[in-house]
Image (cartoon, rainbow, N blue to C red; front, side, top):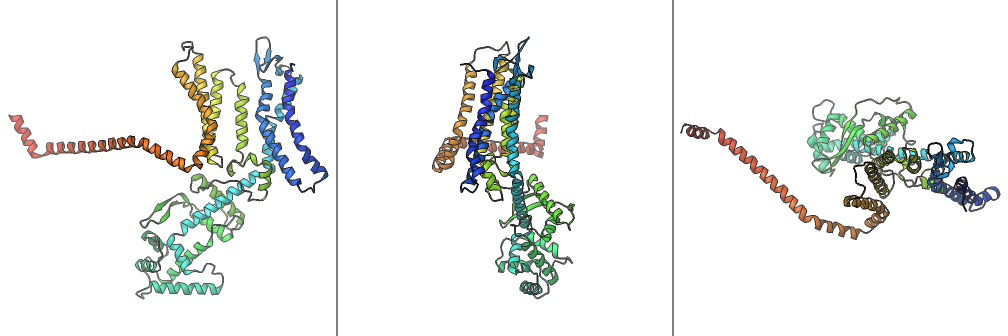
Length: 538
């Protein structure tokens, strides 16, 4: 029995809607008749999950089927539909049932499904939750950087030794001054009324406070030695301890943006944040932060708490872009309000990706739509069509390599491998089509052409085995160790030979340099001049 193209199109576009209605029956019954049922919430969650997953599953096939209704071929006097030459081009008869149905199907599937998915993501507050989770992590890293910059090992241990973390009441301040006076007398061994750097070092060694170095002590002395005589009197020493203790205890590193007080916000806004940061090692193997501080004053009202909070988050994001703050991979864990509901209902749309790339599945849907459907309208049957597809795949490959959006690194590797194989395949197809249009190129394939064809085929076929290989390599540590040992055994002779060649070339270059120096020395010596003159006279 032969069905018309319109009938086939109606079946293709109606079946997904019929399946959705069947999925909705249990949820509709509980929604209308028995909302107090113990499985009510679970049923609603399962419906939404199945509904969105079904639309996501049928999207590429049905979209390609609907878009092919507008791909026609001009045969001179008439335009025919490429998918079925028994049908006239619907675009030439805009009042026909085929054109109207095709246009409605395009609005429902290629355009409507991505719009619905994006709307569902917004409805379940996924973008806001993503911003909140990323902001929380950036703030945590920012506070950790602040503590690392201000609390070196010696300052943090001094602050712990002297105590006085709060100093809110008069009694706490008096006790802190007494402890500071006691420490000052212990440091001042010669009772001179002041302490120098050597006395500070002896005290630190006596109290087994490790991690200090002369550079840190010099920085402390330069900051608190007001008169510049190289000695700290009690007033300067007390100010140093007060400043160290306040900076050490002001921020714990676990605060959220809502928890920060005005004092903490002012401290963060006025702090000299680095333009770049790296970790360096001092002579005593202590890891410290090496940074280039900014000298610009913050453009923010220090009396406005909301403005300071916005400035802090803006600063954290800018430092993350500059690479000063390195955030770990953020995943969806149901920790924020409403997150678990979104995971239960539409989690398959964003769970595989890092939090900041929650939207990546929508981008992937459009990429697949372009590669499977839209590309057929671009220079059909010409090398430009393959070049356009290769361009789209190349952009997707570069974008994926740059951001690596998947929460699982194996998925990112698999996506990069698949896109790379796609780019190579399209490039090979482009070369074949260009050669086929060249009359000077032989029609029969050479051995090299067949070899490249097989290689491209196996490159695409191997994508199926990449996940298994990744899992096997990650789970079987014994196999990985044997493989690394075997590779090392295979490459050891080559590495020895390479080392020998490099060593021999270094020795030869050194000998050549010494010979050239000796020749210059002989040429410039007086005896060489006499010999040269005598030889010339003879």
